Figure (tube, helix red, strand yellow):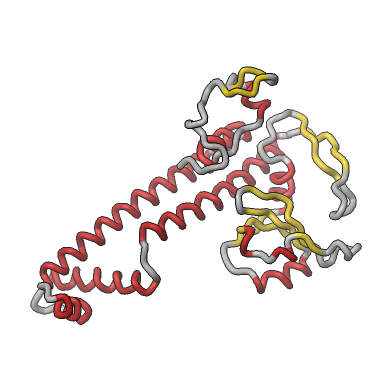
Amino acid sequence: MRYFILKENIIPKQYQFSGTEDPLGVFHSRVIYQLYNWIVIEFSDEMWDIVKVELTGKILELEENIATMGCALFSEVREVAKIYESESPYYPGVKVPIEMTPEISTLVVEFMYLFAKEIIEDEYTKRFEVLRDRSPLEHFSWQIQKQEAKEYLADPAGSNVPFLDYISEERELSKDYLAGKIIEKASGFEDNMSTMLVEMQKLLKQFEDCTTIRGINILYEKYLGIRMPTVQAVEEGRMAGEEDWNRIDITEEDVKHGKFNF
């Protein structure tokens, strides 16, 4: 089997669970985890060869052990957990105990980091598009304007700036004024973009540096709006008790469940 993290909307519904009539599992695909609009899906090699030609968008392939352990034991903090075992991909199987060894915990942390990275980078890509607020053609035009403005300001007499010449003539504004405004706007955009990129890198670094499931659960709750398991909240004194699910360390305003908090 091959395993991938991708946006749910880039793969046709018929491929999200298929091959139920194929007892040998040759043409098999199945979603094994979902969070927000992201999924982890497993494919047989044969099915992947068919489906991949239809997909567009970012796709991250996972190692099998990271995908299977990560999906089955996502956020698990108990020393002994339970995991489904089945001889068939079409039968959910039965739960069997599994010890959360350091090796397994490391796989889960790696999976949770990679999943969070996809979510965060996608969200910042959307925010970048909002910040840019231009079509690809307009963006390309803006790059030309910026380059010509720099050339003109560096050498007004000897510069070759046909686009700036055209804008100056069309708008009846001096090239000195236009070049200054273009550079001013470009600097403002680049400052905002730089700030956004730094924010993203700092956020990703927190997830990347995390080495425990408990630690990354805290980050998922703080930034991605996914509450940590009740058992962890109780053990860490974040909840009054197993019979009282009210959190005593945060308010609803501190963490908006199911919403990004970055």
